[in-house]
Length: 219
Image 1 (spheres, rainbow, N blue to C red):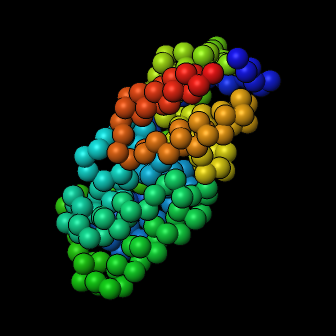
Image 2 (image 1 turned 60 degrees about the vertical axis):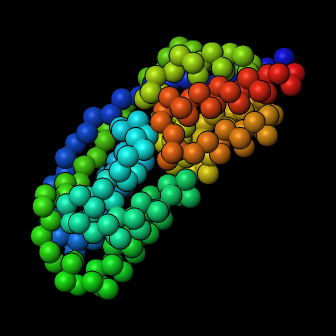
């Protein structure tokens, strides 16, 4: 069985949510907020939403889209915001630019909606990330599988979602290590193709384990 020279280090993570001093009561104010809020706030309301809600399949995938739907009753705008796939982004600047573009174009096309008051204000928040090693690592595929089985929801989110931005890669920690550490590029691609929007954390984990088991049977 192949053993990686550099082991995969499993970690867990916790987040402390902090409400900022920016808020929006209209779509025009949301645009202003998107232009000036911190990178951490953009991350919180997009990448972080998937982790905090455990990949819920109901509703929209980011807080901006959900607010546009539930508090401004603009379903068409909400769908456009939700269509921005975070897997396509390796920088907050690029994601912010597209968020601003979508909201800005909508406000320009429908100025009467841009100034309408929302049912509830949108508050821009941030998350402070605190990571801690679990004291578990893997050098082989079997050890990796065992680690995945025992990984918490927060740890799975950290390695599978937030790593895409942290590592400036269009992939995740698992796929990165499987390809570079064990040379299992085909398995790495299959893991990366697990849909982060239509799966819950548990179903994504189950699919990952099935892919590992299928790879193990080839040996």
